[in-house]
Structure formats: C-alpha cells, structure tokens
Image (tube, helix red, strand yellow):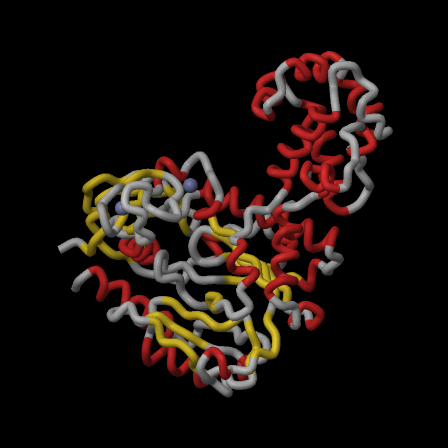
Length: 409
Ligand SMILES: [Zn+2]
Ligand SMILES: [Zn+2]
C-alpha cells in the first residue's frame, strides 16, 4: 500500500465511522460547503446542503482531505459568487504559528521556491527574494512551542474581545485548527452584518494599529507640540493595555531588556529611579517627572509594549466576508488531527496533541526520514532519522502528511 493510500484509508475509516461526530454550523442551509479532493487535489466549491446529514453522507462517500464551509450566510449558497446574495458572516479570527515569529521555526520549518528553487528556514516569505515567485513548497512542524505561542496570541485576542469589545466568554467559540493554531468565532447577530471595512477596523484594534498616542504624524497634523500633554493614558481600552503593560515591563526590566526597546542613556535613569518611575510617571501620569526619562522614551516603551500586547492574527481571514473556514470535527489534511471546539475558558488546559487526535487505535510501520522529538496522545516520541519504526496510527498519519515518513515496505 502506498503512503497516500494508507492515509486515505484512515480518513475513510474516520468519515465512515458512526462514532464520528461532525457538528453542524449555525444555519447550515445558508452556508457554502467546500472540500478538497484527496487524489486530484482539486477544490470542490459552492455546494449547498439543506440538511447536514446529507453533507455527512457526501463526506463518507467522497472522503476529502480537507473540508470547509463559508463564514458567510447566503440566500443561494450554491450560486456563483456574485449571485449568492450575501446575508451576513460570522466574525472569524485565525491564529496560526505560520504567522508568529517563534524561536523554533528556524529549526523545523523550511521553504523552497517552486519556480527557482531558492530555499531557506523559518517563516515562508510572501515573495521569493530571488525570482519574486509567490509559490513555495513548505515543510513545517506543529511543535509544542509553536502551539504555545499560538495559544498566547489567542489568549490576548480573547482578552481584547471580552474586556474591550464586551463579548461574553460564552459567546466566543474557540477551536483548535487541526494544525498549528486556533480559530475564534463570534457568531452573535450583532456582528453578522459588519462589512469588510468594519472588520478591518476590528483587525486594526486587535493589532493595536493607528493608536493616536503613538501616531506622530497624527499629532503633527493637529499641530500639537511634543510634550507630556501629548502623552496621556486613560484607564480603558488600549490606553489601559499600554499602561498595565509598561508597568509590568518596567517592574522587572533589565538593562538588556531596555536596550532591546532601543533605549540607551534613559535606561540608566529608568533603572536607578525604578520606584519613582512606576509611582509618579505611570500611576500618577506625570510622565516627565523623572529626570532623564522623556516623552520620547515613553513613546519607545509604549511601542514595544504595543507590539507585545497585540494579538498576531491572520488579518486577511477576518476581513474576508466570503471566507471559507475549516469545518468543526473534520480532519486536517496536513496532520490527520481534527478541528475541535473547546470552551474559551479552557484554552490553557486544552491539549491539542491529545484532544484533537482522531485515530485512537492500531499501529503502522513507517520509514521516517526525519522528525524532531514530539508528543502525541500522551506519548513522547522521536527524534527519528532514517529509521523504520512501528508507531500509533495517529503518529504514522501525521508523519506521512508532513512529508517525513513513508509506509515501510
Ligand atoms: Zn524563486
Ligand atoms: Zn515550533
């Protein structure tokens, strides 16, 4: 059996098993459904299903590698794009380790330009630096560190959505994506009618873009002089985030930390007068009350804190009002893990490498070309290098999907 056939046969078992649950999205009759064909690598789109049961039937017959539905609601989900009759869309956020600069991606992520063959490690560039080609072959790995950084970004997003936007925790639907990240859906009727521009505003807020306090141009336009009057922080929204973030940062910041922020001479003043800086400047808002610590210094620290406190979402996903999103309960073609929902409160405790495992029984013999040490289903495995091993099916599927193993002859 070829490696592909092996993975396909396991996906078949999953979609044909009566124990498999694939929860329906809200208002399935208004959604566009889509799926990627296993062998042809062709995306079938613009499908409409009155009943979710008939879609599940289709899945068990076709057995796609990836399954999606629209975030949008349409009058006619099966019509051409311009004739669908857009009725609204869920507000959706995607957080993926692909977009987060982690320390580990240089170790386990590789990319190669499909046109000229230029290759490198780390985050895949948007365009090839040699030939400007936009297509890449990539080799990534969903490691614990990647998941942890995606989890931290998701926690920041949830905090912004609840604290600043006022959504209740229960209104947020949180999912592990099946690969290296999380999805957060807001399905409240209040957000459905938001257009792309409005969603872009929300994206900017989440990313902390265009904060007046940091926007020098904005200040100059208004003809304000630089001075402590131009630096003032309230106790709500991003102002509060900056204030709390700066306080916590300066409470412990070392000279090296401050150097990273871009501070030189003021670093000494900040460290020497740490207590009065925290009390007078941040708590009492007397920003220029400590000699050697100017408004420019505060701007630099605030910019650094903004970068840290913003959530690294994939901005394109949120603003696209016709976006297709992976369907809850279906398998991810790059891992064989499933997209799965869990309560927003359990973000810290939910372990994707246990909770999202779809194949729970059996083993398979595979020849692993290379894999770092990893953890799945409560077991720690690897590292492997050019060796034949008998592994749990979930692990074998993941290694094959990631292009790191073949079924052993
Ligand atoms: Zn190239
Ligand atoms: Zn990693």
